[in-house]
Length: 347
Image 1 (tube, one colour):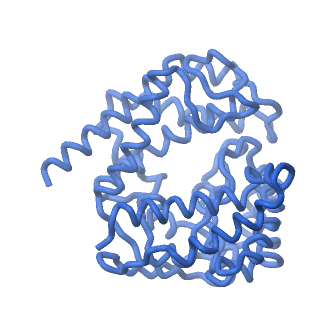
Image 2 (cartoon, helix red, strand yellow; image 1 turned 45 degrees about the vertical axis):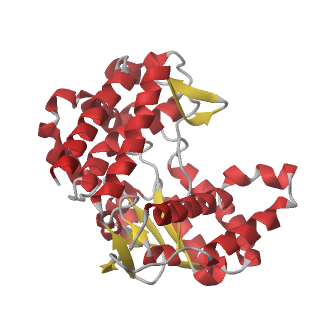
């Protein structure tokens, strides 16, 4: 039987792998270079120790469409060129390390907001790589070199590449990245299919939503969102520090994914683009923060040039969003969470 501990072990491993393969870990090279091999050895050891249980897991075969160059050239040749360059880089430098390399979200469906939408990825590292500390180190430097492609799409990209392992596909917790998102993704490699052993138990998704709700509750209580600081600054409530556009964009991304996480926790997983209409009228009294965030996203390409320079929040964003955004976000999140708890009590 799949346990909560197993879920945490896999989640912690993915977070460690994602951190080690990102520029966030580069301080080690300068301050503690001897720890690079130590970390790679430990990651490899942890990978070999990951629990695997196919009990209660559903096998799903997912067809993944190839990223077609002509679609991106027609849409916006200059702006989208980093994605095509990334595809070339992946095929030339990363293919041997990976099971697949997917992009998902608005850059896959091409309903992005220019300069606002980030480039969402899902990189599946194969077992041959993770069994070998040397291969892990080689992949690390290649992935760090590729990070610039993300920033060319969005200078305020709040996350890097997101990683999963080959074993992770055999013990997959779909509330982290729902299968519906994978189905709408595009692959940069010539594979085109994934086999996933997934768990859809609602209680795990509800617990994941609880963490988001707690994060927003803490932000409201303390007047500061202690996540994704930039230049040693966190986002404060009611625009107390205007030099926090990167941080505000992260906050608004949390807000705009609440409907997706809510539906997944209800056992009704839905692609993000379709989630708003399915949820809106159940929470219409608390929906204003979603409307404001959506308006900012839609207006960004017309109001701001790409790439955006600096980190100051534009005056027009301040005008649309207004103050008390932590309160408004938590009000919506908590209404959704209470609804999920009521559903759980009825089970």
